[in-house]
Amino acid sequence: MESIMAPIHFHPNQVFDETKHVIDVIAKKYLEKATDNVHHLVPIKVAADGNCLYNSILLVMNNLMATADELRVRTIIELMINEAYYENIFSQFIGSVTFVIKAICKNNTFSELYKISALCNVLRCNIRSIYPKIDFREDMAILNNVFTPRPSIIANCDITILWSHVWNELDARATNNNVWSPNHFVPLMQSFVYDESDHSNMSTSIAVTPEKKTFKNNTSTRIRSPEFELSPSRHLRTENNMGTNFAQSIISNALQQHKSGIENQRQVRLDILKERALTSRMNETTEHRQIRLEKQKEPDDLKRMTETEEERQIRLEKKKENARSHRRNETEE
Image (cartoon, rainbow, N blue to C red; front, side, top):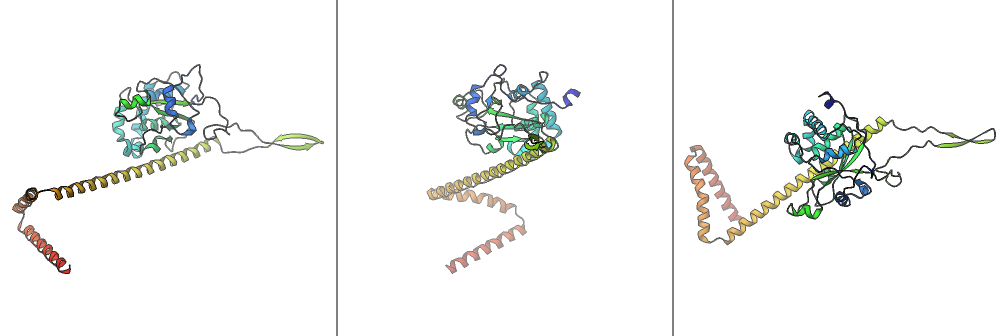
């Protein structure tokens, strides 16, 4: 138990090595449908056994002793200890975290947002989630996002994963009523070290201390000028806070759009029902109209039989008031 509770020292391997890794050709097709700034990355093949998210972590992890079972257990513990934190962020999108925890306890179960977010804290790293632009979803902005650890934890590194499928898009749709839905994760790696001028958003640059010329004893001499920057810890905290705020902003906007969409759909349904009711009444025969009116009277008759004297007086007063109002309206017209 002590080994499970001890922090993982996670220093991922980010560069593709053809002697160790195999390119996932199906995932590569899905990657081509993702955002442009990840097309240079390489999707690596991992076992599609339901543990693919954990297998993706293990593939980039320089730790031969770690297993998918260990990562699963650590993820469950993280979700249970900080259940309120995860419930507050994701429950409105993918249901209760309690239900998810029960599902994770079963081996070979497909992962989703809860597990990705929890693994950020288990590994102390930022996880960039890439979702192909296939079949628009209201939560697309959340799925294409950088997940960060809780504010109290500083991320030490970054990794990127792709939502994929074990089959090509055509076959995947054929087995799911022509709807594409992911059932696989793969890690994305750099094919080689990128220069900062080519991919500034994903690369790391080598710091070079600037130099300047001076003249001493009539001889040109180069000296180095010190260059100061934020310490690594402060830099990571700043990026972490920015990432957290950005993610929360995206989630909030997506939730508002989701609620607005539900309300619009509800209003459309009500309008359709009203239109159908009006059309039905216009087309009904005299006999059908009489039957409908009789059915409407039945609940009223039953209610009158059980009403008290006070309720009866109130009902009669309202009826009189409605009649007087109706007569006034007729007079004005």
